[in-house]
Length: 96
Image (cartoon, rainbow, N blue to C red; front, side, top):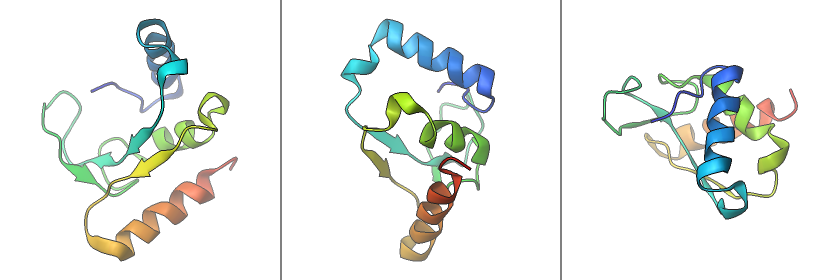
């Protein structure tokens, strides 16, 4: 994974992504927090703001002008109520 938990690391990751893959080639973003720490090589999804990535990183994503027209797919555990809670949280972060 990539460390996007701080603004500096998020920007560094986005620059690297653009240089290697190209933002023009980004067609969708998969959103979920993580139950495992960075570098654990474990991909276990968590609800937005409830895991090791943290709320701040998702605020960087939803407020990034470069990503405004990119579809974002939410894949969080624990059913519809938690899904709705994560969506509400993401929407509240927008420009906030």
